[in-house]
Length: 491
Image 1 (cartoon, rainbow, N blue to C red):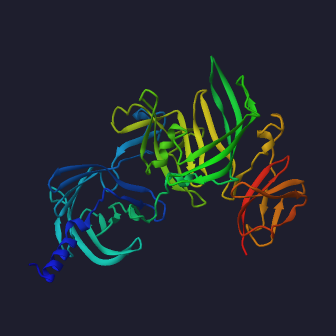
Image 2: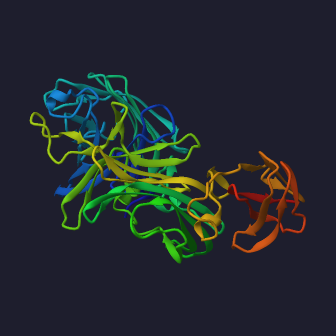
Image 3: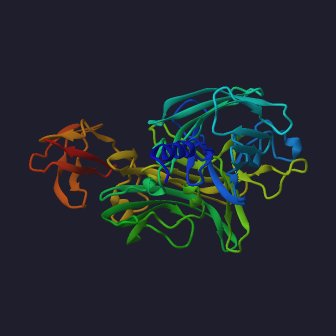
């Protein structure tokens, strides 16, 4: 019979084994920052797992694409810097082989890491023995709010790696001084994480999105230009375990439109489910990691567009996803990758004379979509105004332009309003830039109209003492514009 001391010894031995110092867990996604901020610049994830033997597993890691700013046009591109490196390994290398007591990182070079780390231990860190490594520190410390064992390994090649017993690579300092700091791990949900796609589309009753669509496309045998606005007003929302369904009313305002058919006065009613099925082919970007090479296929399975994903934070601290763009010669954005590589490098592709616009903002949803080229075809859809979750962006054209009251030749302008405070008790104060007469309405988050009236002064007050505590939407409109913002009644 095994004694208690024997069982404790077995437990300690297991906790000290290489399994506790797993450099890569295929169920996790590891987020890193390369600029010292909380913006995720790189994400390491496992793409493929190959079992090579009883205790030998090869993990293939995700690869990236990035601009080659130093590549000259003589390589076959349209201009200096119009190139993209594709299928490139990230800083942790392209694959990781795990065997008992050893992690072997490979592509483009090889680095050997012994686990579990032992303070003062030295070993040959590459197959030739040219580079050596040593464990220079081993201590208990906090990582992403969790107390863990942390080991620091320094190599004679100038790289330093800091490992966590539970969460892989904490920090890597490359010989060139570049620092990759771990700031989050998806799986155990620690630290900085990418929002789920549905977080980009959090709409409620009373939210409004307004888009401007314009461009030139082939109609029959002629090139025809178009320029119009689309407004969507959301209504009742019903949540479920897999997402939510929300009703909407959608109208079109035609400024000018050279197709035979018009769009002004056309009103659509319906419901939409979020997370949505891709409305545009390039919505695959919502699931992307930074610098991921994305390929859009046509109906025959052929590659139609290739571009690299860009993820960052905007000035408001919201996650933003777009295609990597590089403005060339001040007149064209080249971010679409050629079908063929350069003659000298298999993984270096020129960028072509076509811009792909594909941008989403957390909480707002689609911000920009479309394409343009040096020649005639172009189709651009861009957010021109919105009121989502009480935050107003741009200016909203009055509903009457979209739903048939005003004609297509009316001039559109907007008067800005704002609430003195979005938190109130009995009185709501509204400031405008003029004394123009405006109609106002207060609705709740179910879309019910609760109060209405008229604003006649640049500073007005509205009695909200009869409203229960909660969140509401204040909407104001006139012949010059429409505006709305959320506010909270708290007592």
